[in-house]
Amino acid sequence: MAGTTPRVILVTRPTDLEALLARHGTRDQARFFLESRGQRIEDVERHHSLFLAALQTVLQGIPARWRRARIDRSDLAGFVFEPEDLILVLGQDGLVANVSKYLEGQLVLGVNPDPERFEGVLVPHPAAACADLLVGAAEGRARVEERTMVEADLDDGQRLLALNELFVGHRSHQSARYRIRMESREERHSSSGLIVATGTGSTGWAKSIHQERHAALKLPGPSAPSLAFFVREAWPSRWTQAGLTEGSLEPGVALEITSEMNEDGVVFGDGIEADRLEFTWGMTVVVRAADRRLRLIAA
Picture 1: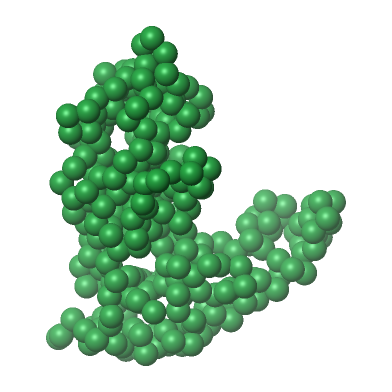
Picture 2: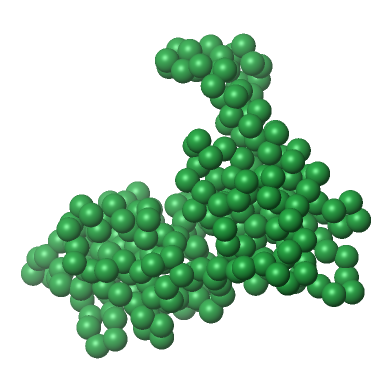
């Protein structure tokens, strides 16, 4: 960044209190809604106050002469990031996953405003550390951890990226029909769909499947270049098989999946079903490790 004034892009999402007020209009109505369900608005307000305090600390930590912009999660798709931007994510781990697919190598600093509630795997830093970390990143002194991403390429040219996992299946999670191929192995499946997970995603959905079926497959570590895939509840019949239901995708190896669903076949990433690709009869999707990586400022 030598010779240029750094630009920090602060990414946030509405707090639970802000979402409640947007839905119910007033504090009293929000309080009534929560109390009718055995919850207290004071707890929500406390977490909101923690976020505001962290936000104030983070804003004060950005050098005064630097350029800055603040965007909401809902603005990500339309925002134009510059190659040298420093991305400051203030929120839960999932917000980093939301941001990652819009980036092309920019450094990401994840700040945890509420360690009591958020794990902090992707937002490991306290707000008080923000100032030093930003300067260190601008001067090239940051310790960077690269995280593998997963991509889906449809045969019509559409592409989808995800940091945790991709899901391929029926939109309603009912029986999905497709053909699956990995290298020389190929089967026809009827299943609840399949997921392809990165090392980052191996602590979430993939982990629950792995534990439930007592799989011997070793899940990839946080920065591993490989992926793991799991087919959910494959049904063997005269027409369908259930042998190719899990495995590792090493670098250069891909899954090829061809839809046999007349309607409502989908591909979506990181649990965001609204941001999906339609995957109907005859379409083929290739899922592999992406060339793009998330570059995260490490703890």
